[in-house]
Length: 341
Image (cartoon, rainbow, N blue to C red):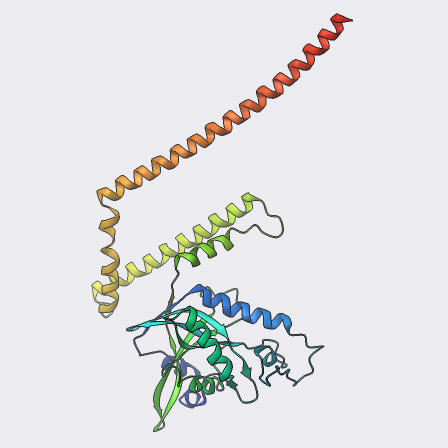
């Protein structure tokens, strides 16, 4: 059963999704490291899962009697679930999720190992004193009823934890990231106040180290021995897709503003403020100082390219002269020996 039972009783599937939208006003920023950690955690657990060696319904205990997340994956479900905590900072109404760590999970009681959680939290606190436990993560198609038990168990650490859900199933038609962030809200259903999961929007935030890492991974040479031309074509294709996507979104925004100006749709002051903030950056780009700096950088790049071409031509010419001298010396020596004989 997907979604908490209280939400399932509220109406049909379409009505549930219309209700499942956050109204807290929080802004969530998710860093790529969290996505990589969750994906790596799931991949390792799934690769270690070997049905012929693990009997159905059995779980392997650790030395302290606790269950690991890999043990939870040994069920008959071909897509194992993994669990962990997400950490970061909250500044006002902005929640920024920087990192995550794995947790031990008991599939029988549907609870997390608190001793292990407190130990990991203490270790991370020594390295990142400004980071706090913001919530937890898991994998699956959608939030399940049992997830609410884990969610409530973390409320003594964070009174309003977030739930990051990664969908490991591959959907070629999906263009967005398979990541969903849930918040918990208290809704009155049939006269009874109940906690339910609601979806929250988020943006991807990166720091310099993450951008360098992602760029390094993107430029890794393919394992099949692909040539530099193949990598260049893939890079240009990605750039073309990004520019095409940016152009389509600008067009959508333009049509939306035109319709708003004509009165066909209601004005959204929040969106207008964001557009105004974006447009105020344009004069900075069109300033005279920007043009001077751009032309200087452009000329320096052309000069470096020109020097590289001259160096390449000089090297080619030196190779040609060396080959010519070698061939000429052989002819001279052969002619000299003939005359001497």
